[in-house]
Length: 91
Image (cartoon, rainbow, N blue to C red):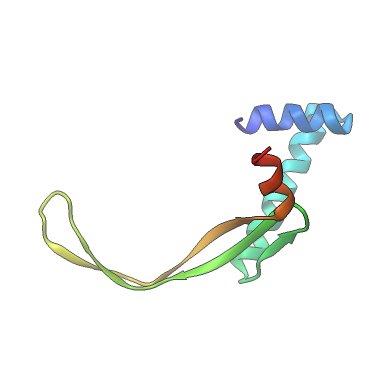
């Protein structure tokens, strides 16, 4: 499912216009992005959690030259599925 299909599904389920459903989806993703950018996770009970994980510095290899390179430590966004979502997927 891509973004336009998701907007259509939201519009149908919530009895909204596609424009309003698109605005709602954009507002939701912006709120999640803003919270995570400021260092906070987002928990949606029954669905899952958007969390920030630390990735340690490591040694990598340049695939073109084969030379070893140092990759800096970073923070990455991750999603952890909630119990209800796991159960729905595994039915």
